[in-house]
Image 1 (tube, rainbow, N blue to C red):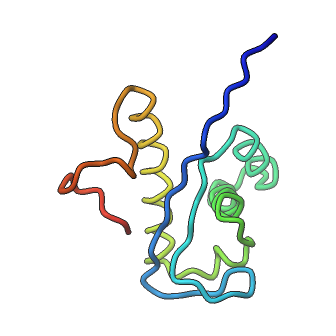
Image 2 (spheres, rainbow, N blue to C red):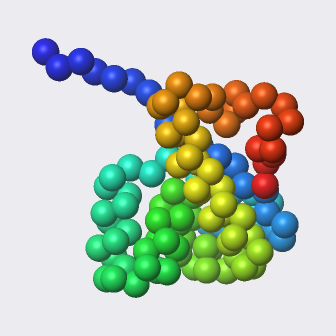
Length: 114
């Protein structure tokens, strides 16, 4: 019988500089979950080779938001989301290698909420 592995999906919350409307609700932060291979594939297929659109679709999926919600972010906040996404990936790799996850990072290591 195959071993069933239950793991908690890692997330990161990005504080927005400019509150925005997501799914009809005004928010001041977005939470992204860890991407799956399926997320990556679907975003790539839907984007049809457009790398900017692929990223927007991926972020929308990970934040449970609409494409228009992500496109409506200010560019400053979009860059925050990008940094949060790449930190989420890096944190996961660090945890796999025996490092600490973002929510377990010691104080003063430079990893502050965006």
